[in-house]
Image (cartoon, rainbow, N blue to C red; front, side, top):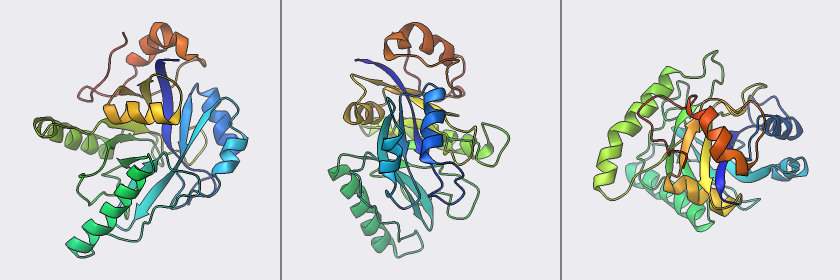
Length: 257
């Protein structure tokens, strides 16, 4: 069914460093938050995806990976289960070697039908700041969740948003652009869905949702709805509620029609 679908595409379980929740806890929290889909993005592995699917029920769970390199992180979303993306490179390699290695990984994800997303490009911790060109990436995570902060919106998000906004005009003049998305980067309880991305898609399938994200048929919400909702209600209820809670002015939002 065509509609607006809510999803959080950056989640970690106990399999990732700093993760404190099990797949059962995370999928239950996602359903309680009214999310329609999530992407599993453990650090440098796709192992454990089956554990999420076992507890998914009516929640769509997409296989992915957070590719944690020495000088930046990125998300590979929509991978076949068991597919592993190499992370053993950094901007401190020679320019040609770095471009070749990351380029091959981006091509590999695209051939598998997945999306490549720049993750928290200004995260203020070792390896968190993204030091690669955006060329070849499909989207940019301009809003990353709280992690260790008490605030949902922090200086690194402001920097990512400003950088994305500044590049938007130039990208459009070149005939393309990279949509902005938001994810919680959940590691701890109470973080899931803050923020998340609301995607317009023809149906709730991996292929349709990834196509909606890549096309920019989406907007970012800073909170989840008060109660779970079905896609058929997305135009009449969820859009109006979440619209007022969306990200600060400057990030592209697609209206409810």
